[in-house]
Image (cartoon, rainbow, N blue to C red; front, side, top):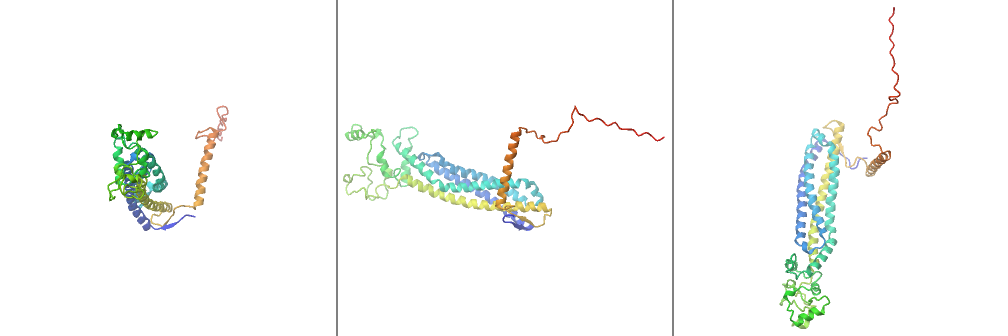
Length: 368
């Protein structure tokens, strides 16, 4: 029994073909939107590529870009097919091509759904990438004279100012690294020497943060050094001074920023998937209805259209049997070792050694 069978008159088939032609052209626009969203996400990630450790985060925008390009091509071809399907004579040229086209479009539509889901599942991978990337970038904050790292200080400062954050997990991350270059330290100063000697790795560590961590909303001048020393500053308590420096870590700030972008993109891609699925359903109805018209031989007659000719179980069983039979035929060919296409052609029972005797025709004698 056919699944979701619908009866179509000639007028309904023509209208369905016209509507699908328009929808396929709209789908070309949605393909451009997918391409644009993927390109936008890729640019946003590349802006802070230096702060990410895992380069696999580009898989989502790359997939959206590829899907968008393919969508433009498939839907452009679909528009041409639907336009020709309004005429049963023109449908002949697409008859054998329609089913493979629908199957390929189905898998392509499934890829759009995968792209939408990847936008929602990318958070954990992105969080790990940001954590490792920021941790490594903070170590090189002081290396303004090292080739390849000279712009990293500016990148981190701009990041902390723009996203109002400080450090990786928080401002205390700066206490664990030497973020001041040796060239700006007075090595003859006893306090500097003591700090360097007190650390096992010989690093100049202090409870201070860069200027970019300062909260612009603070009513008092920003305190960058000796943040945890209450006695070093008048009327100061570092535990209650929420407005002195940014308390939020940059990893959390960036994660919230990218999560918001990806959720918006994922929602848009999900809507596009539903739209593409509806177009694919209409094309399937048009294909089956036109094929039934050809079987009936009357282009003006009514015809049935369906999604599946048989039930889901019967369709799955028949496809499984086809796959099994293909496997068995391959096994028989492999065992016999004979790939001659004429192997089953029957041969004669005689050869050069047993040529059948020729029959000598007898000449009838004339009557005397």
